[in-house]
Every structure is written in structure tokens, then in C-alpha cells.
Image (cartoon, rainbow, N blue to C red; front, side, top):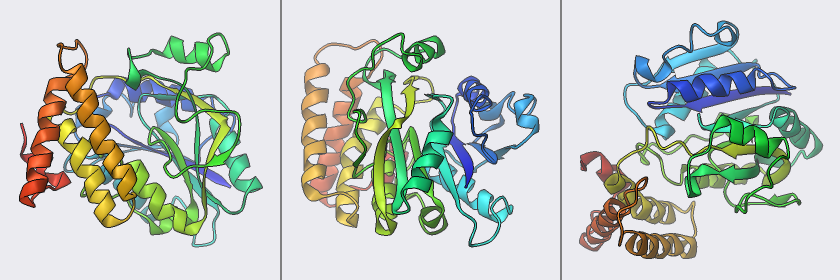
Length: 306
């Protein structure tokens, strides 16, 4: 069973180069790696890397958007003949550029798919996640993966395999049947908040979506390349409501997201935070709610916001 990797990136070429070095150490090498940026700066230095001279393809899309960029990677995988025919068994892993996988991540993922014919998606144990605090660095990732640091508490953690309604977008893999028939929803622009929930729901029509502790890694949570607080805050409300109407997120879960973000951004926005624009997020939350009351709330509205 072949492994392929797609990396969507914006403004973090150095992070991509480092991730490629980590992929070069995988015990099972990917048959192809597709890096999808938007401008030449996004992929600067990748083409000249020794690793990139082999099976790494660099693509540029006409605009930024994690969903659009990941779809471009899927289409290239199919159109360029990197998979052979309709019967070939493979899986595609989507890594964020600031995710650092244990060196046996792809091997463990492949073993899971082979052992469970009914599993269509896999996400792994996040040992630490810089999104929820201070950004982490590669030396931190090595310490967590090497067992020198204890894993942090995380919703994608635990010692037991279990079905999960959403894979975690920084590290998730999908079997060929899903890749051939599912696409990321490009109505979720820019950061694509909750695109992993949507794609997992689409894939779940074909089998179980599984968390496995065997696939370990660290999400550095790099702050560079992020969208503005205002835009992200709007997406925090608009995207769950959109997915609820679409049917790929339950209404109760969508409502929890809305309430949680409002309360968190309101509480944390009392003081200026050095790293996160909580006040901007709260403004975006409120704008989305007002738009919802006016009947015009749409995830694509973030493209109009400055």
C-alpha cells in the first residue's frame, strides 16, 4: 500500500523544508510528496533541497486557502498518474507544515489501514500542541517523541484506538476510496476552519474514521502565516453554522462551538494578549452573529474583511 503526502502551506517555507527533512527519515518513504503554496516565497528553497530532487512536487494555486490547496494536491496526484488505475491501494496523509511526525508515522498508519479493511481515515496521538499555548520548536518535538517529555493533555490523545467524528487536520490520512470521491469544501476559505470535520464526515460514508495512538507527533503551532483575528473569529462562528446546514456537523456540536468561542474570546479579550488577537476574534464572532440574524452569514464573507 503506497503512502502519499500533501502539504498545503502559506508563508512558512522554512517550516516546510524542515518537515521534508523529517519525512526523509520516515521508516516507510512516501511514494510522493506534494507541496502546494500560493506564491514562490511560500516554497522558497524546496526545489533545491536534496530530498526535493526526488519525489517532491511543488505546486502553486491562484489564491490562498487550505481547502483549495489540498484539493489541488489531490487532483495532481490523480492527473499526473502518481497512482496507477482505479484498483491501486494507497492512502494520502495531510500534514500541516508545522507538524512533526514520529519517524514511524507513515509505517504505523499503513499498518493500521492494512489491519483494518473497514477503516477509511486515521489520525494520530498529538503529544503536544503549540496552538494551545506557546509555539513549540523542533527540539521540543524531538523531546516529546523521544520520551524525554511527558505528553500533554489533548483531545487527540489516549492509549486506545477509537472512532472519532473528526480527524485532526494537522495529521490525518485517508484511504484511496475517500481520496477518489471526496474533496475539501472550498466554501471554507483561507484557514479553512473545521475543514477536517467536513472531510471526515464525507469519508465516513465509506468506513470507520479512527484515532490511533500508534501514529505519534507534535503540532508546533507556529504563529506565522495565520489569518487575522477578525477573519478567524468570523470563521469560528460562520463555518460551524455552515457545516451544520450542510449536514457534516451536528447542530448540537455547532452550537457548542459558537458558545465556547464567544465565551473564550470575551474572557481572554479583557487583556491584550501578546500572541493571539482575542479582541479581534470576538469582533469577528459578533459580526458573524449579526450576519446570521440578517440571513447573510456565509464563510466566504471573511474574504471581504480586513
